[in-house]
Length: 362
Image (cartoon, rainbow, N blue to C red; front, side, top):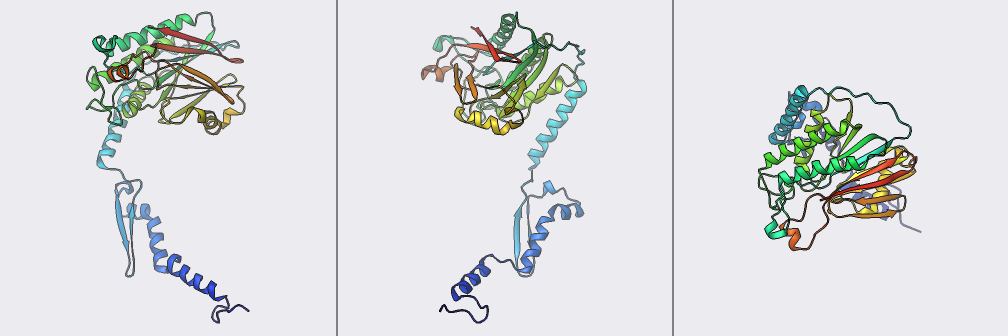
């Protein structure tokens, strides 16, 4: 017969475990009250006339115990200043944004989607013919993209284009800091100052979008990227503010790393390509875009980042990697990473998915 504890009528080993559990895990009434106070931080901060986001950390104390906490929503004065400056700047852009006349278009049953995707432009990148055999700077970058977009539009003649999807971001800028480094502080060979490159990219996007809106309504999709994670996002926000009075262009400029859109019975995903593995993209699409995944007959993911062409069919989804208009710089040339330079586009049918690939080589 097992020995039982006379006070609890439990087996002795259970009494011992229960006693240890009490010492380790059971909260005392005083501690419960402190936790309840912790959950009322916002309420207590407002009573004291404080902004809860300005409270970095604090102590809740009683006669027998104390609780130290850190506020996860705390923002430094620098962060608050940057966000306030961003909102003020965007509001100013919206106030002074030009008014574009609305272009009324008839709906087309046999229309096509034109995806124009000038990937990895790298404005501010420097390549010298003396070392690599090819010149590249901010002026050449702009010239190549303008020429490439116009060439792709010419090649799309013959298709009834009723919508254009323009993919922005994807290392539109070569650096992300005044120290001429990427977001991760990798040094780069550069042409021009960071602010010159930002303004050059802004003008390039505006010129291209104004041109595309004359052909069809435009959906602008921004892909954050590794060279310009911050400045590329700010640029996309600036472009959206510039066009916010136009009825012929829509924007998806969130910081999400994968974006999804649909056309006809196709689902189209875009991402820079420096994050999730390609083989995981179909499954990610099925989870992140489940509301349109099941109804889609054709599924595509367009990726960037590596500057060379690849295409493969995975279960349920086709993955395409795009070329870049920018050539190899010193480091890439030295290590043998050399690819054909081009800007690419794709044409999608409402019924049959991708029906054409267009390429403008340099």
